[in-house]
Image (cartoon, rainbow, N blue to C red; front, side, top):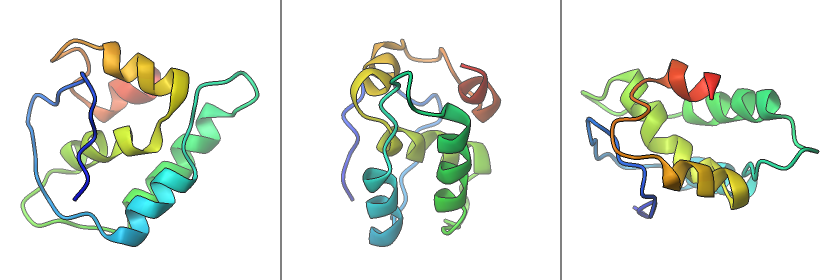
Length: 97
C-alpha cells in the first residue's frame, strides 16, 4: 500500500489494504483546488470510488479520512498537508472545508 505523505494526521490512524483499482481511480481523478474545478463533483466521485471497498473493523469516517488524501494534488494537497493533527476529525468537517 502506498503511504500518503501528508502532514495531516488522522486522530484514529487506521491501516487497511486499498484495492489497486480504487487507488488508481483516486489518483487518476485527483482534485487540485483550482477555481475551474467543482469540489462537489469531486466529493461525489470520491465517495463513489471509496464505496467500492469495505475493510473489516474500520469505521466509515476513518475510511473516508484515510482515503481522501489520495484524491488530492497541488493546492488542495498543500491545504491538507498544512493542517495540524486533530484539526479535522470527521468526514463532515472535511466536506465543509
